[in-house]
Length: 367
Ligand code: UDP
Image 1 (tube, protein in one colour):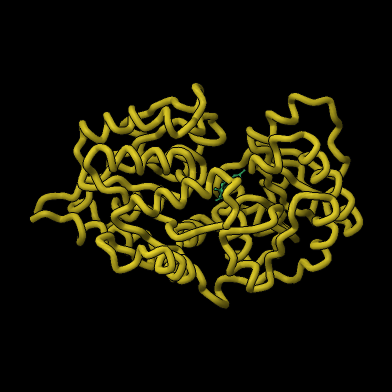
Image 2 (cartoon, rainbow, N blue to C red; image 1 turned 135 degrees about the vertical axis):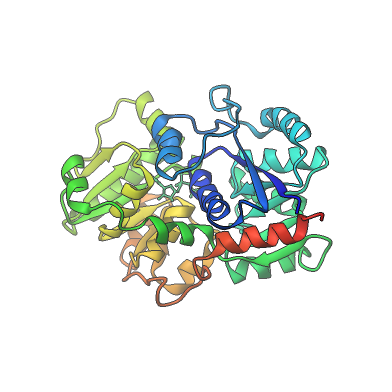
């Protein structure tokens, strides 16, 4: 049988994590039927945002590396080089993850090169069109030939947008990040990590990287000062693995960090999961970290006024805090106990990777 050839396009940290799930499934079960060529746009390029994920998640080195991060990672600039690669390799389909500029550029490049975009993590909407991620999601979904939904509500949403039962194929796969969290959780022991990082329990784990929170120094400092007060009053330290975008803003201003906030470097994935599992509370504007809080039954404050993972808020373990002192103070008291995925698997069974590979092979196998 002829192998189905796919190109996988990744560029940012969460995409390395998601892509590792499918690459592992191919290695374990589908290497005779599915052949993957990995392309890295270079949107994230630092060692601790990129290199370490390739090493530790066992992803093979990308066949193509575009270095777009250095020259500004806008989607427009990526389309041409991606199209050239797609036209050279002529894959049956191009696999895309999530909602970054690399996702959007990959979808357009696949389309204009006569290939078929496949979107993993399809059907998510925050309703906030000020986020570039929202445009990336919507356009990628509407260009895609196969759409894999992480949740039943994502399926419903795509039905409302007229994408179910069209010429494309829309399927509920469950979330590859659940596969990933189950595979990599508990591989790092907390005690040595705590000692290396100099962390004291009990702590709250904080991540911030959305433009709306971190690009304007006043907004960022207001969030940090408010969280410092609220967590200090509960006897919690705050551990902040600093995203490069946030670091860039802080580097431009003269400030001193609130005393309760301890900055650490971005962590590798398994260390990050370990920090999440041991946190009393998780505060984040990240999509992936919101879900991981749920997987590990941690209460989670979302530093945004809306989320594309609406079911997490509906379950009650997650609270939308917004990003002003007023809204954060208001929401903080409502942070209740977390709800673990083991009690209610909103995100499928943890076998999304194998499901996605099987369905790709079924759809694109030519003989
Ligand atoms: N993550 C990590 N190290 C860190 C911070 C986050 O490995 O220092 C992981 C986190 O566990 C999650 C993913 O990165 O799996 C989330 O990525 P990010 O917050 O950059 O993007 P988003 O999910 O918002 O698209």
